[in-house]
Image (tube, rainbow, N blue to C red; front, side, top):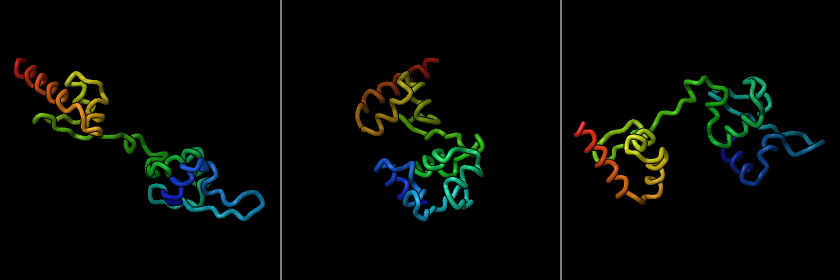
Length: 134
């Protein structure tokens, strides 16, 4: 089952029916699903083999995260995106925001919107001043 197929079904509110065929009494045209390199004949067979619900499989396909379904915790761990603010390297946007005394999502929001750059630079300069004083 392709990501585009699931996305289209999700957008039209038919995600629960995705891959189930044309309806009651008609021959079902079940589409295969690939998860972590293994191809399953249907969402149902993938769900049974991985011991998760069918909706978990459909949602993962819709989000393009098939390889993380029923994966070990080490595969699900997200690493932060390193960020450089005023010449200071931080391992993630969240850690940078917390070090600068901002809300955890502030830097991500600023980068997405492209606004409030002055506040971010002012916080970084204050952080550098605190580091030099310590």
